[in-house]
Amino acid sequence: MASNDVFKKCGCRDENGKQYGANCPQLEDREHGTWAYYLSAGTDPKTGKRRQHRKGGFPNKRAAQIALNKVRVSVDEGTYTEPSRKLVGDYAAEWLPRREKTGNGLKPTTYRNYDRYIRNDIKPSALGRMKISEVRRFHVNDFTQDLVEAERGPVTVRRILAVLKVVFAAALRDELIATNPAQFADLPTVEKAEFEPWEPSQVDEFLKATEHYRLGVVFETAIYTGLRRGELAALRWEDVDLERRTLTVKRNRVDAGKVYEYTAKSAAGRRTIPLPDAAVGALMAWQINQQSEAEEWAEASEHDGYVFTLENGRPLAPGYLSRQFQKVRETAGLPAMKLHGTRHEFASLLIAAGVDIAVVSKLLGHASVSITSDIYGHLIGSVSRDAMESAASLIQGTAPTLHKQDVSEGTKNAPAEPESGSDKGIYSSLLPDSNRRPAVYKTAALAS
Image 1: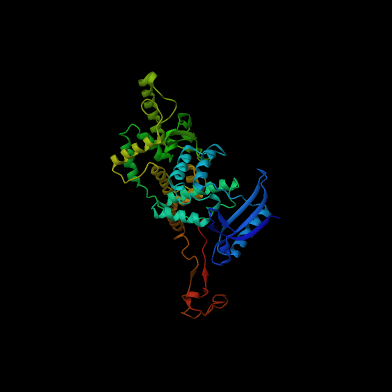
Image 2: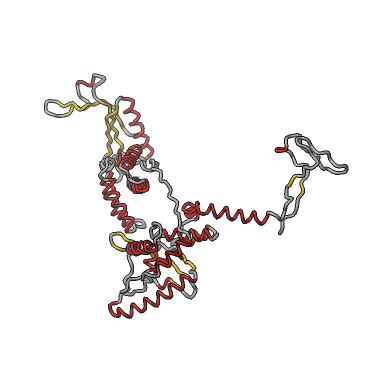
């Protein structure tokens, strides 16, 4: 059992400048000083040093006693953590390089974003200057509110809080804190922006515009396959089977200060996509053109198996693709859209064609069908209505008397007289017509 004490102290100093603490002669005054507690929590098994915990500033003895009791319980249960003097911002900055090299590591773009949020948002904030062991959930909520008031976008705020949550989770594993204060913090609402696809005629105009650009085939492939920007840039000829008319996604290229290439972002991202005739034809023509360019560049050629390259064979940077896409779009005079929009366009065309959402999800490389439904649910709705109307049209006219009530022999609010030798009218209701049991059900078999 841990020894403990609750006492009163103040900040008064004697003639030598030394604090009186609990020995101040004025402590007899009930209004003077504050209450504190001291806890001896045994020996630290890691360092062998005695663990001591003092905390003051409580307005009365009862408040200090309650706080002490909570700490005593954690000591007895073995969940006690030594209060850390490390600041949130400093710990986050120290944690990030370690996280880059441990576990599954961090991809370059993820590291870059984490580093930016820690340096620019977390460390300079009031929260970043707090001792990590003293942070509570309301402190995190105050930090969130400060970001919102600074007019940071809700998506950005959520990303910053996601980093903060991971930082506190690491501190929890390091036994610097007992709970993660960001675990259930308030998050700003994100208004979901629904993607409005180009009309098929506009897609056709875009494809016509690509014919005037050397790299137009990239965007034509994007429309027909739904590949991400980085997947297009990382595509190699060994991943394309023109004979079988398929394309396999294996790698991704990203801009993170410099261009990095790594395997597809997830198991679902590694996928094989069937190619339509138009895409096969475009890729065959491009392959012939690329071979001619390689011959022209001769020994200066840098061709190394990439499908989409500069004239000298050097692979493309994803950012370069985005800039070229905007040039083609502006040439076609089409509404604003990012290169990533071609991926949404591909999905929209599939849904409009009635393709099952599970198939759409697999072709896009989503981790689950629910992700696809969340993004394209507003498009699926109209297709579902069309499907229901098509189903209804199969029924209409084939069973004209299906569940049709014959009330020719009855009067309103009164049952018809049953025919002799028939059960017609049996159990008929005296309730109004809107709630009556029909006197007769004439049924007809549905057409097979």
